[in-house]
Amino acid sequence: METLLPLLGFAIAASVTPGPNTLMVAAMAARGGARAPLPAMLGISAGFVVLLLVVALGLAAPLAASPMAQSAMRWVGAGWLLWLAFRIGTAPPPAPGAPARVMGFWAAAAFQWVNPKAWLVGLAATAAFSVPGEGALAGGLRIALAFGVVSLPCLAVWVALGLGAGRALRMPRAWRVFNAAMGLLLAASLLPLLG
Image (cartoon, rainbow, N blue to C red; front, side):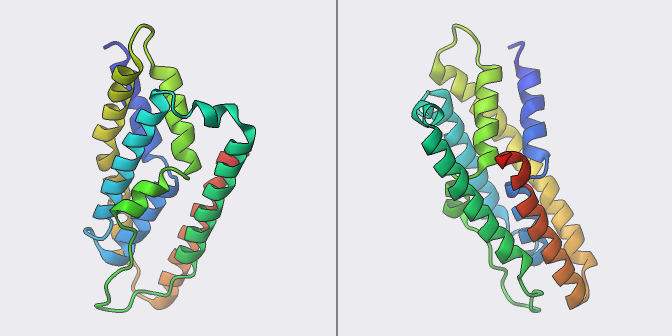
């Protein structure tokens, strides 16, 4: 129980800081409103909770032991993030009344498995907050529950930022600049993860 507050603090810090997930939901909210990113938010949360359980149960050990597998995952994740950054960065201004194109639940959940930040946070949380003598399943559930509790409120902060940006952007040129900035930020989020 003495690790609960530090674990929650770590979960909040890891979940609210800029990264691929937060930037994607902000961009979705800016373009499509408050409801547009909801399926992706649920998918991000569920996918990451499952990833945490897999890491905590040691099922990621073969990945940790294989530099080739780590490298392959890193490059697949980087490729997907760059593709998303390109799609966001080159998106045209939203047409009035047109539905926003968003990432759905399953795509967002699957994205966690190639998201380098998700793996780094999952490995760090498991290493830092596992309690000696606690079973892997119990520890994994405790860590996953902490992230599950904080992930949606943390993503909601970025939805609010996206909504504010969406309201402020009135001209097509401003939308193009916003989209380009979001795409560049998403691509830049790879730098610390790949270094």
